[in-house]
Image 1 (tube, one colour):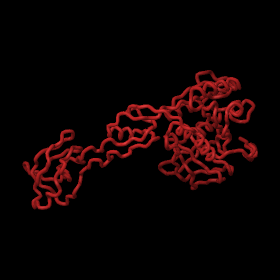
Image 2 (spheres, rainbow, N blue to C red):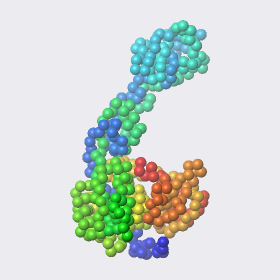
Image 3 (cartoon, rainbow, N blue to C red):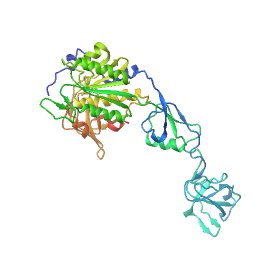
Image 4 (spheres, rainbow, N blue to C red):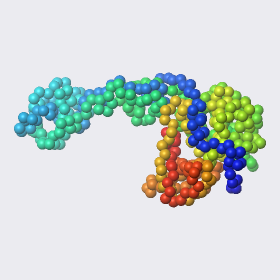
Length: 415
């Protein structure tokens, strides 16, 4: 594919860096969140709308980490033969209710409550038992095998902050605290459509000059993974009036509109023209590859994100710009993915002044990044083959095996 020598020359020096665009966009988003109570068991992927504090200690009582015997450590001091009388047993859910007297010991099972004045537990395999008398080993350390109440979480401690996204392990923590309902942000609603006379839904017969619409189904799947309500407006033909009416409809029923295609400089790229004339286009054209013709703005007070029509470009720009926008609109506190600096095993050249995103695969055995065999904004198979994005910064022109680049996994981007 032949390319012009300078992106900036072609676009009148108006290309915007991804970092600048992202900062400007996220600062411009004003949150208007509403919340609701939801059962903890059903809260996976939801965003907490108010801080959560521990109503109890976890564990709620001091208990044994092993099957063994609980005693008062001080009784060992003058106990020459390390001999103790077994006076009872504590089972999980059925505690021994009395305090220990001098040189008394009780059998305890894992997780069982121990007497209030006991502080040390000896594993049963380390003890010698004869009738109702037990002989203890040497080298006993005070507090061994003893789980103190509140050891994991102390009462009144802040467990989760506002804006935290619930994960499976978080549901476990909330359940351990006896919290069966939490207040979460209501899901945002996003309207989505594709634009282009050449596009067909996959259930139609393919004819000459037509292609199947890959973007919409891919983006809808992303939106569902990000826990959004989705309104699918389908494929809109290259007709200015129809696109305008679609944007009007979408602006009335959603917090964000996402389109793919129609954002470049072609005669039938009507979405960009409509946004300039009837809406507000705050960001357009990024200094990135793939995905240059990206636009962000407002239409009738509703946020709008226009993605490229080429599938791989739509894939990359959604992950790098769309996902952070959606996370902020959803009230999520952390929307910056973690990157890792990892060596590569390939050669690559690019233009100075443009950030480039490669679809790469991390080889965990060799801890090295591999590049897909073919490049191009339309090569969506590269995204399916890869497990993350390799990022080449604006000031770099050439990379070679052994060089390190930043890598972000797809899981991290959609976490």
